[in-house]
Length: 92
Image 1 (cartoon, rainbow, N blue to C red):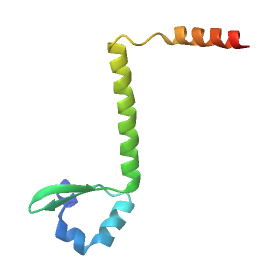
Image 2: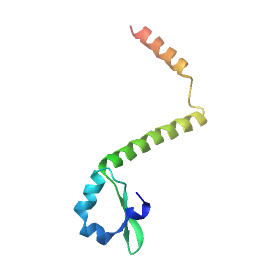
Image 3: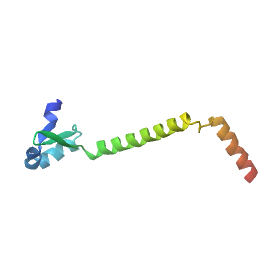
Image 4: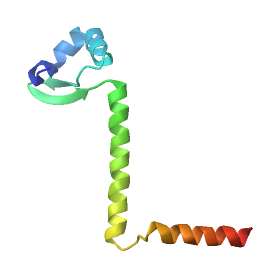
């Protein structure tokens, strides 16, 4: 689908709301809504929105991990496993 087909004025959304929602629900591309010729909002189906949110959450976790590595607050996995095993053996 061409990007120009995905840009609609708010008046189109008002007049064709049910059709827009149906298209989005069928896995259509996100739609850009304009007001006075300027892009004001993006509409997308809920499944795409949830996938986007999950992706953002994973990227935040990766960024946090990279920051911890850069700050020297990371240690090799083997050392962590050994420490946890030692604790487990002491507790048993």
